Length: 238
Image (cartoon, rainbow, N blue to C red; front, side, top):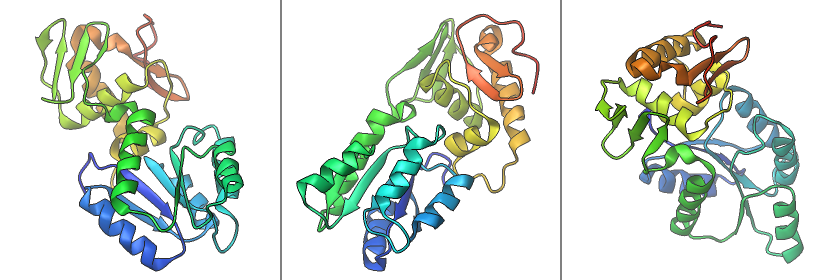
């Protein structure tokens, strides 16, 4: 699995639809995971945060709407992109889904190509780290197109993992992320990566940034963040 793959969680109990979506999404080079109940979806979310959830309305144990409400009530997931997938086409059902926090709504039968296009559009809106535009903070500029990072207009040497970490931080400035959140968001499937490994990559990133190392802050007992505000405690590793 590539480190840069977008992860889509499909919550759907119809095997034929799961198979169709899996085939389509893998063709788009996305990492696809699928579960068939609300309970399994919630269990999945306790271990890993996908980039987007494709959520069926009717599921064996509870409604997708119930899961959506639970996701939006959780501070860790409230901004997670969710597209509702359902055979229902009644206007009031669509309104109910959107009122409960769905970002988009697709009725069956659907075109996998159209659905993929909607997912790409939603990810661009909701996940700034997927941007291909240059990103900057103070003297640091990251160019996603050529994979370069400059500090005060001087190109620096930076490892792939540190580049991904910096890109994520630049997309979410002034926001604290725990080690487990960074593992999920930056590395995706972190089965072979331990949480303390994040500390190593943070240290390497600070070293690579040189004079701009102050941008990467340690927030004691919480995690890390990128902030342009000067601080004296960013070297205190939690």
